[in-house]
Length: 204
Length: 255
Image (cartoon, rainbow over all chains, first blue to last red; front, side, top):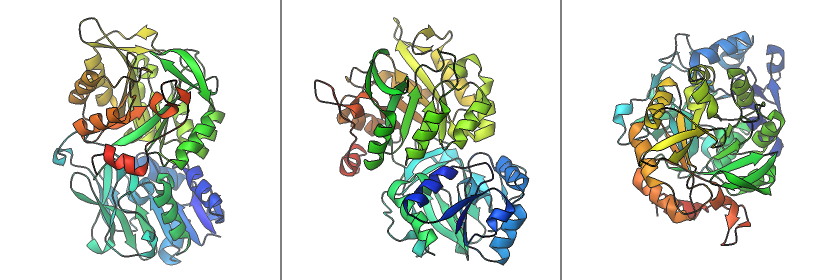
């Protein structure tokens, strides 16, 4: 059973609707108890880093997530701020991240952009896989995915970079280590590619 | 490479979709949910839905309608209309709406922009400017569905809104609205040189060539249209339409 972590942020219903249409069972988990039955996890998120971390801790699910992800090695997919929270820290705020994948979240350097607009990175962009994993099966890389963010995840280790995209330079738009996947873009709103990615995750 | 966004913009009045000309004579064109379903099939980049009466009627956004639209919409969704407080914006954001658009509230309560940006993130805060040409070659912003002129220099307003926390600006030309005679390119140029944040232009698209020109001039920009994606032919029969994947490649100068 896929558990979508519902700690108050992120487009839960978009993920729910996709899994409903795919006939893949899921639950929107609001408490630690509801997480326990999960065979896979989705951690959505939008908005500011500190606020998201605070909401996650407030929800009471943080400790259970640490245990499920780091000890039980349950596959987890983080999206947007959900992915950024997996880092050690963010330039956007003061609160420490979950530190599941060592790295820090940085602001795009607008001076590197050849023309306007600058920040946020908004729209459909290509995603270039660095690792050949099942999660990217049936993905049309030219079509890409939808991005909406001003900060990006800089991994400490290149081994953790799952995919890159191009905006003010090359940046890692997907991260991966063992059972942990993180995507900067929004698969829940990226039409066919997004549906396929979420389906692939369900089949891992 | 980041592509330009081609965006249908739907206007809602009394729960129905309408189209206007110069912000007047709204004509009913259909049911919003049906339109969203069709746009899903057409693999649309992004969608904007604006409730054109909420602010002037002084009422709350129609949360049930927004929830239904958000649930149906498979692409990034921007909603605007009647949003005046952070609580309303957060509530709407949690219904599954990626971006919140404000228009009159950005003028009557500018600090709301900063509060919204803190609450839901700058990338989700959109300011919509409805704009008319002045007699002297400049532009004035209007609120409440084009009825009330905003005092103050339009260019200055743009800069303020950017510095207060807007993540995107939508510029809507009242003069070109519904005429399908092309975008106001002078207006677009003025706005693009004034602000750095993402810009989306609306008002006047009558042909895909209009879209192609704007994208060619600005490389990365949001190009929105109402009539073009809702009507077909010289008699303006209602037919929801959108460029195919191949047509989009041509519009983006990728083919």
